[in-house]
Amino acid sequence: MRFTAIGLLILLGSVPAHAESSYVTSDVTIATTTGGVPQDIPARLLKPEGDGPFPAIVMLHDCSGLGPRSSGAPGRWSALLAGQGYVVIIPDSFTPRGFPQGVCTAPFGPQTNTVNPVPRAADALATLAFLRTLPYIDGKRIGVMGGSHGGTTTLAANIFATGQPNGFAAAIAFYPGCGGRLGEWNVDRHPAPGPVTGYIGTYRPAAPLLILIGEKDDWTPAADCKVMAERAQAAGYPVTIKIYPGAYHAFDNNSSPRYIAERRNINKPDGRGATTGGDAAAWADSINEVKSFFARTLAR
Image (cartoon, rainbow, N blue to C red):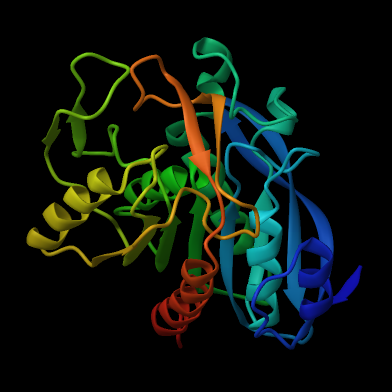
């Protein structure tokens, strides 16, 4: 299918539009693993018109997945970036593993372990490898980006790429969960579930990382990411964080903030409940941050 970037942005919901290029979309299959078992997952590929070689971005969806309950954020960001001249690919980690409706309110337990952010990092790296097989991709200029569940997966994938030749060249995590084990970084919770009570170690990313998060986020608290970023910076790692005053989780949309009690939330004493909602100023600024960061880190 062929779209103009602005046309698809209108279709997916209004967003400050800067994209002008047209692109084509196609469905592809990624060979990955689940618990060491080979598995194929579907993905949507957006390719700008032309021969390339293009920089590329692996776009990781949030806990709502890519089905009928999707937040729409992966599609909005992918359309904007494809219009900026990036190849963008969106792998679906949930549907082939039995969660087409997402996992935002799914029960805690082994049923969802195969789609937690750390296992999902294997999907991101498999997608990275797939992109490098395409003749119109510049394999040294591939970034990764995701929000919420996909943001945490971005953090995990940016660790696992360490030591791999030509790993991800850049990473952007929107409102990720920084309150868990990510390589040498971890937290204490006493009791759990509940707020973080202490921090352990240092997050060591393989590529430059930008974290964008809201000050009032009660699902993935900004305080945890702030400490993680500061410790990484002190150790010499290229981590940047921007905290938007007054913004909640999922600020990059048009909806009004609302609290939903059924959402899984390890930061709450009962393990449930979180607020999401758009913030026009934060969303507009985040577009500029994303464009600037990828232009700088994925430049030739």
